[in-house]
Image 1 (cartoon, rainbow, N blue to C red):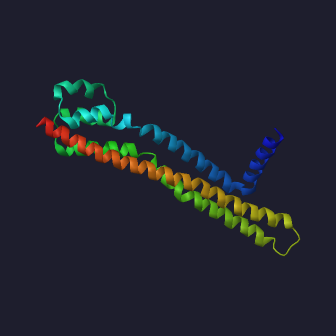
Image 2: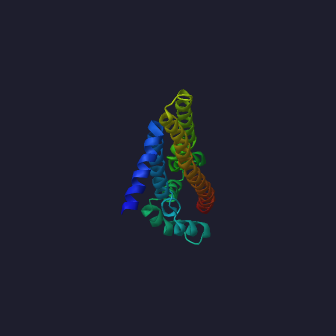
Image 3: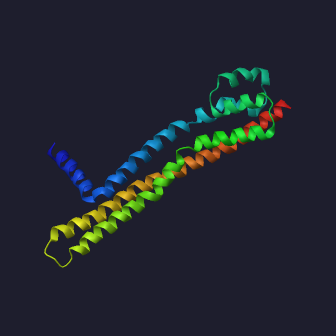
Length: 197
């Protein structure tokens, strides 16, 4: 219990050392985590390309009449585009609708990308601010201010990198998943268009 209390106080002290910059980095961290959870839920395979529907279309064994109930009850991205194609619109309209859906699926990734950029910069800004404090009191007798400046410099740098690294991993993962979905959608919709001819 005492160890837990000490570690908690130590953690709070760490945040206090970083000053205002570490609070901004903490807000960036919370936003990044919220976006990661949102994208992890939104980019589930069943919400974008249900395997059963994809398999039925690619196999070409079921007629359009038999697959129509699947299109109607499916609220995934693939289901939506299948309902659109079923109405036999122009090729440009289908392509535009697919791009719109992919843009919708990409929403939130730009926020993560911005945090990837600004978190290390905020850490660097905190570092510079801490070093200014150090050099401002350098040569004086106020060793506490020098120690505080060094602590701020180190704390904000670590915090900025700690936020940026997982954000980069998440952004890369979600981006790769979206590229895979885009390729699968293109193949599946092309097959469906062929089946309708």
